[in-house]
Image (tube, rainbow, N blue to C red; front, side, top):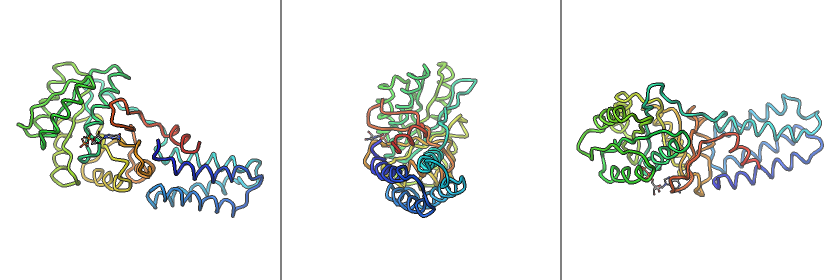
Amino acid sequence: APVFDALSEKLQATLDDVRQRGTLTESDVNAAMREIRLALLEADVNFKVVKSFTNTVKERCLGADVLGQLNPGQQVVGIVHEELVSLLGGESIELEFSPRPPTVILMSGLQGSGKTTAVAKLAKHLKEEKGSSVALAACDVQRPAAVEQLRLVGEQAGATVYDRGTELPAVDVARWALDQAKQDGKDVLIVDTAGRLHVDAELMAELVAIRDAVRPQTVLLTVDAMTGQDAVNVAEQFSAAAGFDGVVMSKLDGDARGGAALSVKAVTGKPILFASTGEKLGDFQVFHPDRMAQRILG
Ligand code: GDP
C-alpha cells in the first residue's frame, strides 16, 4: 500500500543500519528508537500509540539482553516486526457466520468514507470467496441518491438489493429486508446505513435502533485512511456512541500517510478486518497484519 511508502523507507533505513552493526550499545538502541519514533509520527500515527510502541520495543530489546548476543541487530528487527504486527491487530480475523442464516452485517460510517462502495465490495468478496448468496438492505434513506447508488453497485457485485426507496424509516426497511432475506434463503444480509458528514446524536440513535432490530453478527465501521488521525477520532466516537466490532479501512491506495491504519486498533481496541484499495469492486482484501508488517519492513 502506497500509504506506507515513506514510513517503510525510513524504518528500513534505520533497521538496515542496526542490522549492520556487530554489537549494539544501549545508546545505539535509543538512537534507533528516536528514528522509529520520528518515522511513525511523520506517518501520522497517534502520538500516544507511538510512545507506547517505542517504549515496548526498547524494553524488549534491553530486557531480552539483545545487546550481548550474536547478531543483535537481527533480533531488534525481529522485535520491531512482532510489535508492528501487534499494532496492526495481531492475528487476521475472519467474519463470523451465523449457524442460522442469514448472517447479518451492519455497515456504518460517515458520508464519503467509502461505506457504500465497501458494502458492494464485501458482497462481491463473500460471493466469490465463500460462495455466499448476498443481499443488501438500503437503509440510508436520508438521500435518494444513496439508495440509487446502492442499487447500482449492488447489481454490479451480483447481490440482491432490497430497497423501499426513501418511503419508510430506516429501521422499518432493515426489518423488512431481514424478512425478505430469510424468505429468499440468503446466506448474508449486509445493511447499509445512513452516513453524515459528522458524527451526530441522531445518526447514532438510528444506528443503534437498526442494530437492535436486526441483531447483526458483526457491526463494521468504514473509515477513510486518507483522513489520517481524523479517521481515528471518528472511530473513537462511533465506538463510544454505537459500538462496532471491526473496521474496513478504505482508500489505502491513496497518498495519505497510513497513520490511521497503524493507530485504530490501539486507540479503539477494534481490529481492521478489511482493506479497501481502490474504486473498483475488486479492490478489496482481508486485512493481514503480518503481511502488512512484512511489506512495511521489506
Ligand atoms: P459513502 O458516502 O461513505 O457511502 O462513500 P462512497 O462509497 O460513495 O465513496 C465515496 C467516494 O470514495 C467514491 O467516489 C468512491 O469511488 C471512492 N472510494 C471508495 N472507496 C475507495 C478506495 O478504497 N479507494 C479510492 N481511491 N476511492 C474509494
